[in-house]
Image (cartoon, rainbow over all chains, first blue to last red; front, side):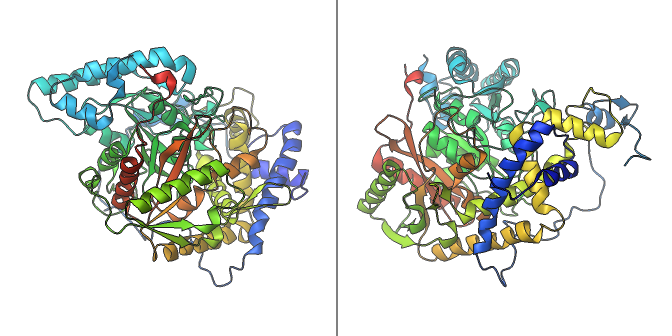
Length: 99
Length: 502
């Protein structure tokens, strides 16, 4: 089992990912994620100095729509799958004052 | 079983247009097949029988009224359940979207419907398209129609199994790292991933936005050409969609490619490859040569596949692919937060972040959680350069290799998968082992190129062996024609597993 990632890092990633992890899950992930991260490290064997990163498969830039009004989802369509709806709003727990 | 399900999509469309067969008869034949074989295959998340019957009836009415019919009129098709449809649900085989009803239909599916197709249902997949066996589905396990103890491949396992068992005339899948091509290889059918940007991604639930493409899974190459005709084209609703008109691939597919030069990449034929597959590819190359093609050695150094000291497959391209795909996935799946749609936790929560964290923990399966976390890690402060940025540079090197190879050849010929269909449960314990199943397909997505898997032959055990043709960007016509040539010279096409025989 790789030690590329430790349990504190796993917990930290869980927080960043907004996924609650049980202790068991966290422990299992240390090994699983560690193995995979170690595998990722293989790329360090390659010299990439001066190579331009390739984020897109196709070279298009600034594809913009005309700034003109058109059809979009109406509130009922947009809220149809809401877990909790309040009028024309998605309802959530209070946000202000939360960490 | 009805002989109607033995027809290809092209044959069905022709027969229906000529009035030899009604859309309703065609649909009923497939619904009957589903009733008989679905319990063994489990390809569908949802069969939309009522809606399909209504569509078929409309097509029949239009035909008898003499109204013009589209090129797929009355042809019963299946759609992978990560493509949004206003009919039925769009679950991505995830608990987090178990009850989601999309407010719009994906462009590619809309185009099929405009062409007169009848959508029979939504097929099973690995959850959020993350997997290579369809075992990561939160819905059910799909079985390979050639041997039900084996996987159909993934992530479009449901679509591939469906077409293979003749439970639909054709299907749409999606391919991010091989998810159309590999299940097609495992199930003995044709699976085509067009060039990135060739088909609109609007309405395809995003996994890796710079890698995802929608494509057809069919019983033969001509059907793949017909479906590509229908779904390809620019879409203003997808800003990554190529501003190039679609071509008529079906009209050209019977014309062999003159002076066809086929490149065989050295690095794909190492000890890592199952010898019977290597043999099948070598055999195919010989057949092409006898038919007048030129076989050329080419090199794709950064896609090299080795076996490491522990006997594991090893490839820079796999590391690169998974960093890119997981990074993009972590961003794309951030939208599942229990607010706008999808599962929300019933537990008491301590504020909104808690709401997100619990909803996501409850709704996502273990593989999805792994990928989100790895992608979060590779994009996080302090690691972004070492992983994500590094991977993007390696991606450029992989793409450059392909560009150089295509200076010497028109298409590349290589395996689709290092093995034939493995057993259900065989690889599901170790995530990394499963990732390495994709070694022959992922480079193609990284480079944004088109690739097709067609059946090469059956192996000694009677399982399908797939082979892959890869071409330069927007060379769909060449690939389809070269693939059609193989069908003609080998006689290998329209393979039918025993369970689907009359």
